[in-house]
Amino acid sequence: MSREDLRAMLTELADDVSQAQLVGAAVAQAARIRRRRRAVVGAALAVVVVSAAGVVLSRPTRTPAPLGLPSATALPSMAGSARVDRLPATIAADPDAAPYWPESAVPPANAPSLIDKPVSHAVMLYSSHPAEGQAPSVYVYGEDSIYGGSGNGSFHWARVPVDLSYTHDAGGNQALPLDQNSLGPMGRRAAFAQPDAVVIVNLMTGAAERIALPGLNEDVSWLINDRHVLVSSATQTWLVDTETRSAVAAAAIGTTVTPLVGEGSGLTTLTVAGSGAEPPVLRFYDDAGLAEQSHRTVNASSAAPYRIAFLSPRGWRYGNLVAQAASGQIGSTYGDFVAVIDDQTGDITHVLDLGGGRNKGCCSVVGWLNGTDVLVYTDQTGLLRWQLTTSIVTRLTDPAAGPISVAPTGCGFTITIAGVTSGCIA
Image 1 (tube, rainbow, N blue to C red):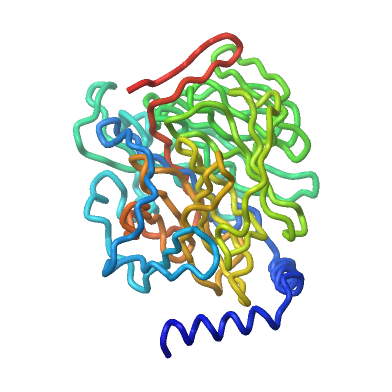
Image 2: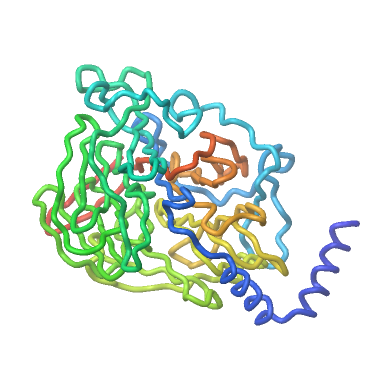
């Protein structure tokens, strides 16, 4: 069948099925798939690149994918302007993965304590489900520390020596304390939501401090200044200053924040209405997330036939581009994909089709690499690197049974909170 025959056939099918029917089918299917909490499926991650030497301060480009690439396959645009890539059937290992990225996100059983074998900076955090009755443990993968200072080019796993409990929501459901954004900028510190507190751990020393915070706290999101962290329950988000140990109520909902990695300022969130029938909405806040300044509706037609019905936590922002994992309608079917949204225009510029047949919440965007590559994690394929400029998709780390978090690393930003300006200007 030729491409024109295929396009004609799909057009005829689209004419026979109304948009309302398609959206309704997508929402109905989404409703049938019960979303497990992040800790249950182990799909919530946080990713970052912690070696400053490995950060390239170029902004993502809109260069079309060259023809004939053996990895992600560019699909012909049927209506929208977004470039569409497809996850390849066989994903090659990334040539730059080792030793910076672990081959597997599962640490060895004999991993030493972080106190006995410190790291100069962390690359990844991992937590597995413990045996019944045991407290959850967190492990760190990072570069060896030379006398408590710079790294030596070798990497290892270590156990983070901190006592943590499961988080609980109002319904009594429990989750592991490791969140997608637990690992802070440059991999120096980690934050863990806890009942009536947030725990901050120095990953260079293993020292931990507990900051009192009322509520059933379940989610954390570091701001790029490495000083403030948003801590959220189902009813409240707090902006916590880890230096003064103070907290103020935030306007932004922490679980919807798309953390800034570099080349920008301000704070953004991305949300979609509960029914999934309406397009997502980008909201713009001041640097601290204390006051909403404006909002913009995403141009759903720019990615047609892909239509977002459900967002997987969480998206990440580099400059004016927000990368977000989602699921929803793909023509007359339902599947999972990653969308890159230009927050200045509301257009979806790139789509990575992950295919169907996955569990809801299977897939997450966990950060940006070099400002041009999106880091994607799925429960079936592990940690992936999607190069926007070439369409190539490669594997950095094999999948694991528990959640992971990777530290954001970027530059070119300036933010001001409570009169204090922080920045990294290249």
